[in-house]
Amino acid sequence: MERPKRVALSLGAGGARGYAHIGAIQVLEERGFEVVGIAGASMGALVGGLHAAGRLADYTDWVLTLTQLKVVRMLDVSRSSIGAFRAEKVLAPVSDLVDGVPIESLPIPYTAVATDLFARKPVWFQRGPLDVAIRASLAIPGVFSPVVVDGRVLVDGGLMDPVPVAPIASVPADLTVAVSLTGERGPRDTPGVPAEDGLMDEWTERIRRGASTLLDNELLRSVTARLGRDDDSQTGAEPPEDPRYGALPPGLRGFDVMNLSFEAMQAVVARYQLASYPPDVLVTVSKDACRSVDFHRAAEMIELGRTLTAEALDNAEVAAP
Image (cartoon, rainbow, N blue to C red):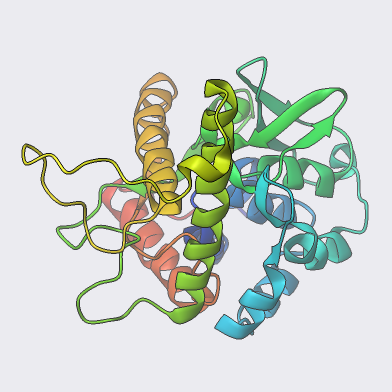
């Protein structure tokens, strides 16, 4: 019998949209392809690591049970100004599934990409505990606190390599497939801002409000400290209105500005990276497929990943082995 066509897989960063990676892997396996190498950033590192460890099906069963309330309970607000939330509760199910397994013992070669904040360069995890690599790659600036590994302060891998294809360039594969979560938005309302029809969920608004307050207060403390002023004298101060500028979108918060800025930077970096290491098949998920914190929408995102992957394979005229 013919051997399954070997696939090297790159899974990109993008919060809850990363559930689409599960659907992509399902379609590849259903069509008879064999994943022989995986690189991932942020949520891509999480899904890719679980697949490399043979535990993705268990994780999928769990995320399909998540509701808004369960997600809120997992988002443990941090008292530190470095990150809005602690990551321990979010990653506890992942740590339980991988149970301290080292990356070098995985049956599928795997790379998790993080970012060295001070060296300003990507860091590839190809050895060491799998859960540590995933935690480092998931350290979204302003949301989860950075981690220190081997003396390096590490944050989200999507910061510098949102679709990591370079780590799998040397994998002996017949096909390279990349799943990007940074596709252009459609013509809709400003993302992250409550729509006029009131569809913004209360729990998401609480996350935005809490994170924004944390970010705004930290910025205020930083600025007033540099200027040698008292925080109290500046609290609540509003800049004077200038008729030359329009009004900001209603409901826009500091967390939204940070999140949108991060996504814009990721989109640009992803284009350059994909131009340097073009995959054979590119699956693109739009940034407005869901909000980054919509972790209760697993079923929808998995199905979207399945649909887009099937379309990308068909359009590239990649026949099943």
